[in-house]
Length: 110
Image (cartoon, rainbow, N blue to C red):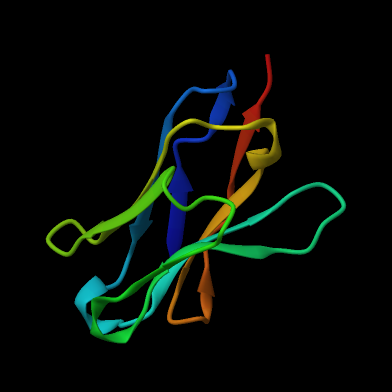
């Protein structure tokens, strides 16, 4: 199971760090990442690790967001800086393109 946390209300330009606790041994999986779904929109990729350790970011968050992971703690993180109102969404962590967390709400508003 996956449990995401760290969402909240933040002003434009602010930062948040999302965390995802994975109840399995993270080293077993090659693919893992973060997705988001804004109101009235489809779920979209934010950032992910692929096999070989490569990272992919959506164009809208490049240079502002950073994905990381901690194998010892079985955790996946998403550092979000310079947040914009358009980043408002429910953020979900995903492992192996199969397992989903429940999501954590990020609201960017003044």
